[in-house]
Image (cartoon, rainbow, N blue to C red):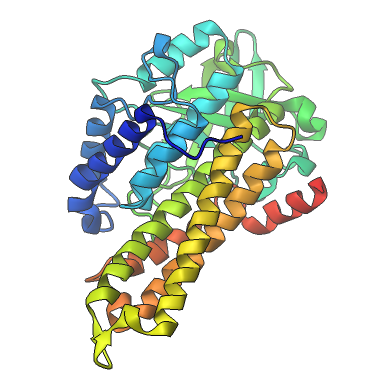
Length: 390
């Protein structure tokens, strides 16, 4: 089973991620919303992340990465999200886009696609394009077998031609490459499914305006439009019919990432609110010494620890190819994201009007927490899948 004691190497990894977040992200965290459309702050942070090897962290060493496993990536995500969930999502989604390449690519494709993502000279991030305007989360529901996917991939000799529109992918407009979920014929279900890598400079690839959002402003979302985008057949991961299988394996490995981002968000809000309640005097004593407030923090601390343990169990099960790893991943995502929403709301509550003020970070943590209950499969869908797996 999972060893609760971190190795020295993992402790150093945790410290490195925490120091990076404190040095590079925290000083500009309050500026992400104003900078959302231009993203200059995010670009600068990503370049620093590339220089220390964070962007290519899960990639094998022979392709320039650090060979971080599923547990290692969770350690890093928590530290990043404890400062800012949006930056954790930007980096985590780059890892998300790498996963289907790691799973389904041949050696030539891994060299061609992964090495640039592992660069320490340039900030090359990735994006994965799943959701579509008409069908929402259907693409993430294995029961739908991609029958509602309308991003068409047409075979044209040695090339593939892509037409369709994706919505809400992270890193839209700034990614070096996009992994696109498509189909040669929706009527074929999984047998027509495919995953195709599209580089940023392909003719016919364009983007809508950044989506206005309530939170997560470090993470850029917009429509990604494919208008007769032509790529060589060598950009196909696996073969036609493999797309759904690779996608669902990818989601199992990465859905728990949303869970750990939520753990980090909850922890960040919790630590700030706890510090506030130790100093804020009400009724002649610090707030934390009032039994009701103390009990609220006890419940929050317990929930955060429980969420973290579910995420680590899921990460461990992925490294062991455990037969219930898909269920564990869904459980971790649902519980941790619900915990983050509950904890951040409570942190706003215990801080009163100050918690509601933008002068303090807990209201931002609450706004950031909400979307994670929705992306990577809304919790309502995942609860259905958990129930079906029982």
